[in-house]
Every structure is written in structure tokens, then in C-alpha cells.
Length: 505
Image (cartoon, rainbow, N blue to C red; front, side, top):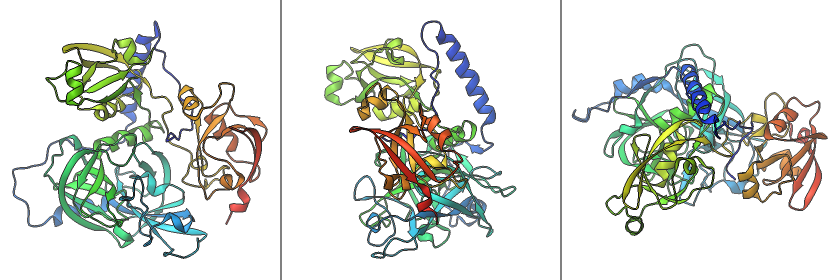
């Protein structure tokens, strides 16, 4: 269960006469969303690929380096086994994949300390203090400090994060700051020269140069991946830093490397700036990331499958395996065996590109589909629905990033609403009501009390819990640091007492 949602979503009316209203409502909401979007600088022109490579990037970097900041994170201690022998990075998704967060304050073989500090990077995206970084940078964080190039250290507020893209949004109050200019990352091509700016190993701001090695990579196991691969030297501590083109425009947020040791091996990955821009706009304007759903099970189109389904003349598309009844695709007329080749005027390369394309739209929007059925091209229009179990920005007291500074309870616990999808995935009976526990920080008081992922919180301090939103409200500003939970697990219902006071330092 990757979903880590807190506030219950409201489904749009799409049945019978509700379609027109839902579409109009969605268009109005999207217009309001655009009006509230952050005032970033976007230069959508492609880079100048005809000019000679300059002998120096000093002037370009002088302009952009104030926009790339060092981030210092104070976290709870983790067991020593969670770190590699050097204590420099944490592997994930396989022994050779590493995120760039640089934990400091404990060497190999030392016992856990009460607090640890980590060094990472971030990018100032607006002049009024919004900062982008990676979610894994602020995960478990008790305190986040943004260190500006001019020497100021500012305590940052975590406004929200998106586990499905590994992005997080911070806010600092510092007057007018130097914000970076965004590029259109869809125009990035293999062979383009790029510069990586960040804080490797916590030593201070550094810049390296390389080229775009590949685009459209999906290697880390996230729900939404479209990474830019580069050979620019990237190391632990570069997490959340900037990947820029030769004009100093942001093309990506550095996120991970492929390495057997945790050090640079010339294979780094960055989240494209367009994807990051969509996520940050949602977090700023709505406080959550809301994605749309087409409602189809798809797979990549191989040459053998293309021959079987009358699509041998194309090498691109997503083959539809299953179309659930009453889904947007089913209502539009899409059927099993169809090959989706286009969505909203854009080509669909494979199953992943279809998921990414749908995810850029909002529930209630109508999108045109191009489909091959037995070799014949057909067109459909689907009204998208909200993605079931989609996440939103998670309040600090119910997220794995640590305790709320305001003293809310159940620190380190993630919860989600119980809907059909989560019930089916977690095998929870229909008569069980409450909030599904999606994650529990192993360093938290809740973990020590016995709360585990997959449990259902039925009551908090003897008050019934009907949704994840209820759980948030019932844990806000508690009278004391001890919380009584009634919890359902597959062995039945039982009570737990979570004592946050024992973790106070």
C-alpha cells in the first residue's frame, strides 16, 4: 500500500444527468486552480542546440546558484542496520539504487543517537519562498532548515508531499528570493548538455556537468515515473537539487542514482520539471495532489500482441486488458482488446505513458481517445473520475516524516480512507469501519505500542473513526500525550495505548 492519504475525497457526479454538471464544475475548478497557481517563471523555448559549447558557464551559474539551497534535516534515530557501511546513503528498490540523502552524526557501527542531521538540496521556485525537494529528504523530519547562499538559515514548513513522485514542497519566509526559471522538460533530448547543482556529501554547493543520457526512464518503483537520466556527477546530498540546461533553466529535480556503492557511477535520475510543476501547483493551490482515472487495465504492446489485435502497423500504444464496469473507459465505449494510441491529442507510447498522461488531468475533465480495434481506428470521449485512494498532502502528525511541532498525536502514522480498492487490497471485511493504517514509523511510539500497517483504527480516545479525516481531527491538539486506540486487525479488534510522552526529548 503506497497510498498515504488523509482527507476523504469527494467523488464527482458522473452518472445519468450529472455528466454535464461535473464537466462544467471541473472546468470551473481548473480555472480557479490556474488563477491560484504560483507565479513561476517558465521559458518554454527549446535550448539553442546550434550554438557552440561555451568555454565557461560561470555567468549562467552566478545567476542560478542562489536558487539552489542546502537543506538540513533533523530526524529521529534509525537502527544502524538501515544505513550502508559508510553511512552515506540509503539503498532502495534494489541493492544498486540509491537516493541522495546524506545522513550525518553517526558513523558505521555506532549505536543510534537521539537525533540525527541530514544534508540535502532544494530549489527555490517562487520569489515568495516556495521550495521544491524530494519527499525522501523530509521523510521522518522533525525540523527542516533551508540554508540560503547568502548565509541565512530559515526554518521551513513542510506544506505537503507526494509519495507517488517523491516530491515535497516547503515554504520559508524570507522576503524576496531569487527563484529559478523553469524549462519545458518535454523538449529535453538525449545529448543535451545539463548541469547538476546541489549539496553533495553535505560539503556545500557544487556544480557538475554532463549530458542527458536518456529520457522516460522508470526504474525506482514509484507510481509516476518519467525520469531524465544523466551522467552529470550526482552523489548523496544532491537529493532535491537542480538539473538545469546550459541556459540555467530547470529541467529536473535530482532524485536517485544507480550505484553499487552509493557514490556516483554516471547514472543519475531527475524528475522532469513539467511533472514537478504539476505536483507543486496542486500542493500550493489545493493542499493535495488530485489525479484522474480512466479506469482501464493496460499493458505494453509487443509485436506479437500487435499482430493478434490487428495493430501490426504500429509500434506504439497501450493494450487494454480489462475495462471495469461503470468505469470512465467503459462508459466511453472502450473494450478489452482495444489499443489506445492517443489521449487528448497526444500519442500514447506504452502503458506507462498512458498512466502519466491521464495523471496530468483532473477528475471531471473530458478527454478524447484514439483507439485501434481489430485494425480499425476509432475515437471516444471519456469523462475522467478521481483516482481511487489518491493521496494528498499529509499533516505532519500523521505522516512518516515525524512529530508535529504543534504537539499533535500519533506521530509517524499514515492513514487512508477505506474504499473498495483499499478493502480489496488489504482484505478488510465490509462491516469494518475506520481509517486504514498505511505506514507506521518504526521509531514512533505508535510502532512500540503495536500499531502496524494494514490495521484499521476504529476509535481514538473512545470516539468513533469513520474516515482518515476523522483520524486527523481526533489527533489534533490532544489534551495529553497518551492516546487510546481501538484497532481492528486480522485477529479481531483490540485496544492500544500510544504514549507519545515516552518519545519526548
